[in-house]
Amino acid sequence: MKKIDYILLSRHFHGETTDAENQQIFSWRDSSSINRRTYERLFKLCLKESKIVVSQDNLEEMGSWGTILSKILAES
Image (cartoon, rainbow, N blue to C red):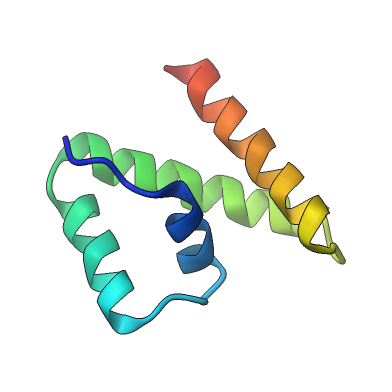
C-alpha cells in the first residue's frame, strides 16, 4: 500500500489541487481496495464535517482534519 500525504488529500477534497496532484491521488486511490475505502471514508467524513462547520478559519479547518484523522485511526 502506497502512502498518501493527508494534507494533500485535504486540499484535494477542498478542490485546491492541481491536475498533477489529482493524478497522484487517483493513482494512490486506485492502487488497492484499502486505499479506495480509505479515500471514500475520508471523503464522506469531509462532507459531514463541512456540513457541521459552516464558516471556519485555517485553525478550525486543521482542527476538523485532526478530528477526521482521529476517527479513522480509531477505526483501524
